[in-house]
Image (cartoon, rainbow, N blue to C red; front, side, top):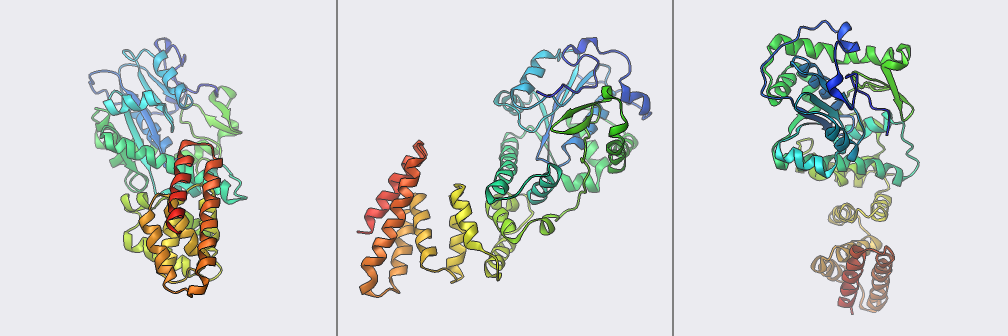
Length: 407
């Protein structure tokens, strides 16, 4: 685990934290002193590159008005979060944690309301692009791209989980950019603190982009005690701002940064969330897919094969469905559609597509067509068996059952 950053003097023995933390001497903002029932355990999670560090610093400023110390920082992910929670005296200290992937134990505590969880989110296409730029990801192959896209998808699945429990506070990136003081007021209310409007405005200024850019630009001039390093980046202990942290906050950057094939892939893989969060409508989503399919030079068939290879069979199936509906599919595309339908256990869809296809075939060609399709399906069944998983074996069985239907 990386060195534990915190603005308490003893990160794992918070009762010893006394006096002013280093950042307090250069932060003259007035402190509110609300009466609160007890210290808070707060997690700032969120999608990658969605302003989760901003929410962390908003919480840090809000909690500084409490009569007890705040242990705060990034301590790692998964069980490292549990370790810090267990090592902190939560009766005498606030505990503020930034983490993107908490453990099951932490998830349970969030669902029960024991942990206050603030989850920031943004258009997942921009989240993806910002992460690629921030981490200087190598996108040499589709698998490289799909791996990063899958991380964004995991973040969205976590968001679904938080929304279903109803105990987390979800904050949209655009709202942070457009009305930061209002979002700070929402956070304070969620943390059971009441802040006057001018204090919210002061905090918004103190943690805004201009201030953050200044912190980042000064990182190399700070003392070793004021920073720590991880993943080849320098991180300021108090704010958790780090090298390259502020690289723009443009909405719609994905249109410029992603290739047409990558844009098509993202829209297929993230469709449900794009619609659910209001970043797309059904009509606009379909229009864009159809436009890409009709774009000269865009190799949509390679996208199908890449998705198939990375086991996103559902997205590959949707893309082939649209291609067939537009009348641009060829024989092999229809055979792939039938194989994917069988792979998903949808024998009805596979059978309907097969008989629709046969309607245009010469009877003399039928035997060769059946043999070709059966070969395609059985080859996929063997590939699923080779995965060595229970799911793979179930899929192989479904494929062979569908293949038998063709006799």
